[in-house]
Length: 94
Image: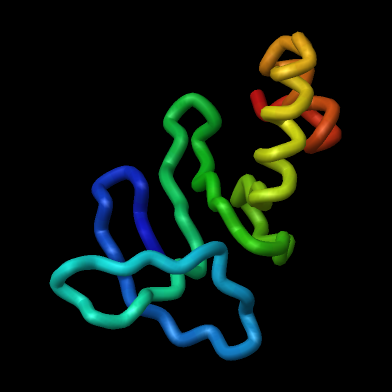
């Protein structure tokens, strides 16, 4: 799990939970599964988590990789960022 605010890495063991992606480093000879990337958003006053699938965690804005890709596709078509977010997430985080 990676905290994007301070780049802290926390090792977790979540059996059956799919990883977002794998990373490898020169110091570590094996690939590391990244289960989640998160950061605190002061404007939204919530934790924002990039997750492989939504869990419905209360008080957290969960976003999947597929949703990020869909937002980027809308933007590539000329849709303004806020509208692209609203279309994909169904609401605009305020």
